[in-house]
Amino acid sequence: MKADEITFRSATNRDGEKIKQIVFGVLREYGLEPDCGGTDADLNDIEANYSGRGGLFEVLETYAGEIVGTVGLYPITAETVELRKMYFAKEIRGLGLGKQTLQKMIERAAELGFKRIYLETNTRLKEAIALYRKFGFTETDEKHAARCDQAFILELENESSQV
Image (tube, rainbow, N blue to C red; front, side, top):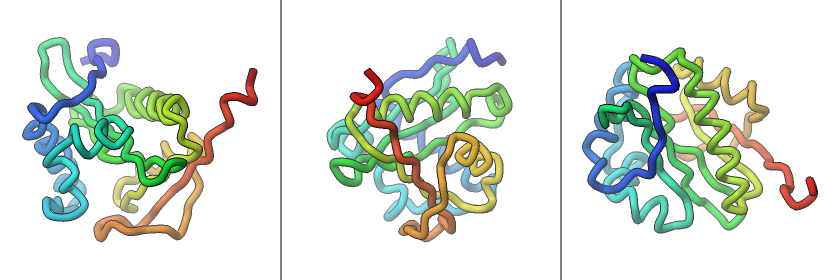
């Protein structure tokens, strides 16, 4: 499979079960347990929890319609959005889609008017952490999900000052 064979689209609640399969499968692959009643409860109503709050949730999909990746922007405050659920099926890792997805989410967060992106992760997700650091995310002490032992923040440029 090649990166140009993958497209992004907005997720709907109809995608919920497949999204959970991707997210929970990757978590288990890294020895982490899903938390359906807590951290992962947002997946029970993607539309209300993301687009309904002023954020977004997208899936990465093959031309055949198979969901192979997920990513969301979950508003925390009027100025801060959390990058959530950025997970990819094994068959699309290493194609550069992590970089492409993260760049797209940074741009979308700015377009939506957010001033910073916050995210939580686990030290076991070494590839993801390296990517976040490469994009300028810095560690912060703020953490709230039980399975996450690291948190990062990225201050976004003021788009209006770049005229």
